[in-house]
Amino acid sequence: MKHFFLLLLSGITINAGAQTHAPAKISLRQAIDLGLANRYDMQANQYNITLADNALQKSKKEWLPDIGADGNIRYNMQLQATFIPPGFAGSDKAQLLALGAKNATVLGITLTQPLLQPILNTDIKMARNSLALQKEKNRSDEINIKMQIATAYYNVLLKALQQEIAARDEQRFNEYYTLAAGKYKQGALIETDYLRAQLDYENARITRVSAQQNYALAMNGLKYQVNIPVSDSLTLTDTLGVNEMPVLPESNSYLNRTEIKQVQLQQQDIQLQLRKARQYAIPSVSVTAGYSQQYLYNDFNYTQHEWWSPFSYAGMKISIPISGNIKNQHNIRNYQLQTQQASADLQQKTADVLYDIQQASTELNNALLNMQTTRKNYDLSEKIYRQQQKEFALGSFAYNNLLETERSISNVEQQYIKAEYDYLMAQIKYNKAIGAY
Image (cartoon, rainbow, N blue to C red; front, side, top):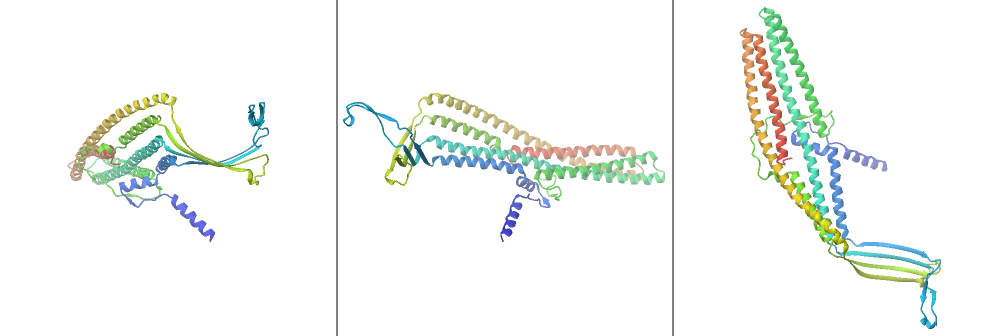
């Protein structure tokens, strides 16, 4: 039974440390969530929050009384002599008299309870502010990871588009080659054009194979970003051309940017540091108490109860810094200057973020317009290809002229792919700009 529980516990431990595998079909949102759950850097960053929270809990416990137990055993090999003036106890002359016990053993407990220490409250607020700042730093790292996953996801979609276009090109050139072969056998096409058609088809086939390889590499890159095994099978459910609507920047979207919140939290930390420096001049008040048992005798026979005696005290301690306040004026001035600097930093960061949002929205709208235009051109090129294929089959169109059209089609395809890529990247940039990640 003991071995059974050990095996069960080991299985639970192994399962808890295992990666979360991806579903067979995955959307961009699911890919991002999966990556945040799987990636080791996110797991490592979570410890920073735990450490910051631990520091907060530690600062709260500073209000607890300081209780300590002490034990002291001292053997006086030679007792210190005390001066006795003339006339004391009937003596007519001054003398030195050694008083005390050779064994002085003290066992006791002491307590110190702070009553008035404003710095402790400020330390708690600073620790809470540090925790909030660490969460924002983690959110900043999380945003970067989301952008990496989104970029990898969109790269797969883009490579799928390139693979689709390459397959269409191969099919088109295969049809050209088939028509050219038939014409060549009939003597209606010179051998040079026939060989060129064959070469163009072979090049299109190689391009299609290369596109497949690039797609596989892009898919492996996505799996790496979400930290799942390469052997896992993935099918992306999102497609190109989703949510293709012009955007208008939101007026208050900049408030959600982590850069703004981090500067604000840093500004609050400086203000708390300034408050703490000013509170240094406030007296601190504590209650102190102690109780002990003392054994004063010449031997170490602690069983002799008559030589044990109790000792206790209670009091109040007030600490007032004097010369330290003079030195502390420089710290106060330093934090005052940092406060003004942080205010300027916040204004500049706000201006930077607002500009970033405006630029990102403009780039996204421009990219959308370019993509829609190139997509229409791409659809038009498909119609031209079909028409000229018929004309070539009927013999009213020379192969050289057909290649000119192919160059135009190829140019349209590259423009379309670039427009799709620019739009996808503009989407990522815009989502980051408005704080959507």
